[in-house]
Length: 80
Image (cartoon, rainbow, N blue to C red; front, side):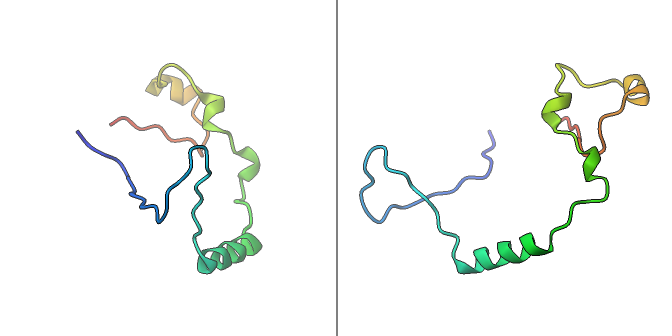
């Protein structure tokens, strides 16, 4: 068995049932995010973006099907 990414949190006080727990990434993260948001520009073909959910099918397309009807360039498939 494999375990994916996991994190362990340690509470510094008791947490009441139903209480919301939030994480503060600190001022450095916020500064980096603000800089990114100011400089961000969409990719040249962003208007062609399709959500993977929009091409959700119960099977993977065959090589023949992909030749006639490929997945959008921003959607990747993977078999593990």
